[in-house]
Length: 92
Image (cartoon, rainbow, N blue to C red):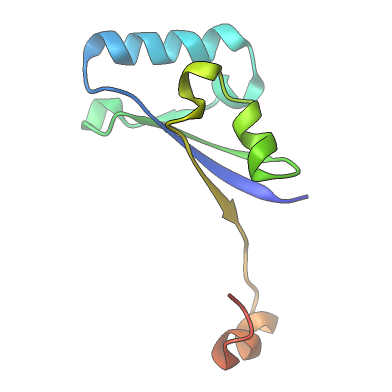
C-alpha cells in the first residue's frame, strides 16, 4: 500500500496552535494523536505518515479545516537493488 507524509501547517499564534492540537486530538484518530509538532521550535506544522490508497484518500482523512492547506507527499524507500535504475534515470 502506498505511504504518504502529510504536513499540516497552521498560523504561528498560540491560539492557532491550541486549536490545531485540539482539532487533531478530538478526532481520536491514531494518526492525529501521534502527530509530530514543530511549534516549540517555531515551525507551526504537524507531520504524520499514513499507509493509504491515494493522495486523495489521505486528504479525506484530514479534518475539513486543514484539508486545503495540507501537503501530501508520496514516500518510497529505495534499496541497493534500485541503484542501477537510479543511475540510468529509469526511476523518477
